[in-house]
Image (tube, rainbow, N blue to C red; front, side):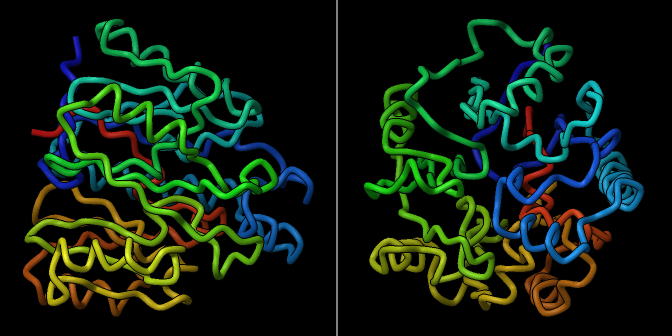
Length: 303
């Protein structure tokens, strides 16, 4: 049995589901794009090649195993993008919450049934249909759960709006002992302004540090709440260009080990100055789909 345990973003990782880029399928048509960044690369003819993405994910897998993490992979489905396992489920405390994702992606969840077999069925939560939520918008942080959301009237028209007000209420009901803090995110068809998920503009780190991008937040007071929570001196503020390249979507294996993209020079230098061990890997091809390291992981057990 797997005894789920995730209470934050940084405690030493013991078990994780890492997505897969195998049998990723043909380049999507423009009308099939789930996000503006993928659309941008489809139209430009620069959409990532499957072989390059497999190489990048293998590098991530090797780093995780270097630190003794048990790595599960999804069953490979034919012509299916299964890279972003954070989209399909997430763990809070000892509960795995199935994400209510875009209907086209339901089979991605079925591809991890071989992992779910090791989890007590009572610890798997299936939200009602009206609850829309993806793991990129949900961050357990000790007594808090941070959630990205979008509650404006045009929610149904925004393909980049993934977590709704009903999801915030659902998480509050399921985890009444936690303080759920929701943040309105900026949604845009412009990839350089769009915050697809909370982890596209915010990431808590070990040592009391955090990565933030102000313009990812629609409400300045909510951004300021995070600045006050972590302390201005502990925050690495990224530019709009750095948000576009997914600088905030790094991944903590432990409080002092961070996996980061090898081209994030300004961030990686800062992390080392703060005393972190930075494991740099190539991930810039996968980034073309508006997702990066955190998006590719579904942590099951942290110490």
